[in-house]
Image (tube, helix red, strand yellow):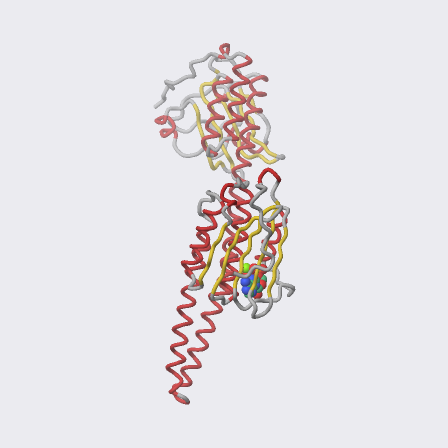
Length: 410
Ligand SMILES: Nc1ncnc2c1ncn2[C@@H]1O[C@H](COP(=O)(O)OP(=O)(O)O)[C@@H](O)[C@H]1O
Ligand SMILES: [Mg+2]
């Protein structure tokens, strides 16, 4: 079956003014920078190439690192024709030449070219060919080609220049997509190793300790049976604790995928109630009323939320506290965020391992906002993490300013 395409581009070459060409080219550029999927961008580029150059057909192939065609988009073929032709071209014949040599190719009559291997069955007849590689930094990423100029003439040097330009757009789109995929992989990988590390540091260690304790209890069955019951009761308590840890941990993971909208007070409220749901310790939140009206920049809100999150996570993880509080107050020059707990405390000057990034992140976020971090803690005297952030004069309101309660323990 030889099908004649029934949808030739309706514009003749002459109809394309210089302006229209420029407009079509910039459309291709816009397609790339918009949020379209790679497939749709490449399809746009193939369509534009076909219309601009005035060809009956266009196609765009994306090769993998081995030069095999992995993605193939056509323009000018009906879906039935596309289906009838069958699977992806394998890059033999002229297409292979294009991919492997990486140079533009113009052929007046495909069938007569010695490098041609002929068309598969059910392929519409095609005569003239213009192909250009899609290249980035010397690497051939694929190719763009056009067949059958509508006026029956061979493709020209000018056609080739246009095709090269569009292939450049395609190269950018393909590279963007590859980069995006790599970044996603990396993020996933980092997320995975972070989860593994967290589980190992916390939950797996606790379970291991519980296992040991059960083994010891087994021995007590013979030597001191009276101690078995209290031991097992402790094990049950420890397991409850681990379950709570797991729940909290999952909540924590969830948080990163939650919407990041709303004002600071609302978001602090959500944060605190999430933590409250996962721990028996009482957590109090207070936000100075003047702060409700202050319009804080989104970036500042994000940093403050992450700071409060990390500080609260530390309280839950390390402090063994019975009470904690989060406070947001005005100071003369800005605002002050305090996270306080009545737990075991620690030595803030102690060396921390490379894995311990929480306090370091808090410090970096405070610095990013031009502010400062102060940690007051002593073993068995609780901990106070205080972050002071300056506000620009128009963001702070004069009258109701208060000093940061320098020695504030609720
Ligand atoms: N509120 C707190 N109460 C007790 N110890 C804390 C508190 N916050 C931090 N710490 C101590 O400081 C260390 C470093 O914290 P951080 O930098 O967040 O790392 P990580 O939480 O991963 O251990 C913790 O391991 C813990 O010993
Ligand atoms: Mg931490």
